Image (cartoon, rainbow, N blue to C red):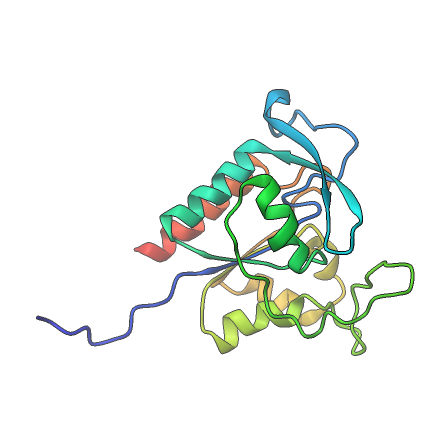
Length: 195
């Protein structure tokens, strides 16, 4: 039996936001991305007992399920939803039990319940987790967050990550979430690493 001479690279990590990515933040479905009949509206109660409107496109949810079933990425929730994504939202959308990305930087809640994007250093709280995937774990990264488009203008470290060839950074339109072009880009990125 032959022994590999080099370790096989681990699958890429997909850091997945909720609002503006899986949940289209809009009072009505946007038909430009997905047909009207593919949208699903529901209300999900988080771990704090607060209910949130969810508008998701079934092709997006099916794609995420298919990625998991194929075992081509390791999905991690990376959202202000934190463990509510895993324990409350995922079961409602019939998504797998993905872990929440380690983000000790997620500590800045205001009394109103609003979560600030910045940590005490002025950095975006989500950026260090993405850096850890690429630098510490040495893995390729698919990072999907609707706020990326704004954060690249604020944080040079986010710019470096987004420009890294081992990173696919997607920032969907908040009122649409993941669109067909995003799915195509993800597939291309995953296939390019499989060669």
